[in-house]
Amino acid sequence: METSIIKIGNSRGLRLSKTILEKYHIKDKVELILEKGHIILRPIESPRKNWEEKFKEMANNNDDEPLMNDVFEDENFDEWN
Image (tube, rainbow, N blue to C red):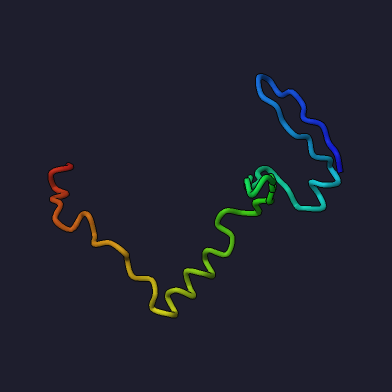
């Protein structure tokens, strides 16, 4: 498929047809991947899709321990009042 690059303000852009947007479930954002002389656009469904399920899975596998020590363990929060 051939499409034109269009002027958008001081920039240039690519116009995608309604058919393409619907077929590939493109909403507001796409991931732009530059790979070996190719430009790939990948739809972004939801940045945090399935996080709740994955967190539960981590808890069930005892894999939900913090990776760093608590940075506030030696703070005196009374000073903040």
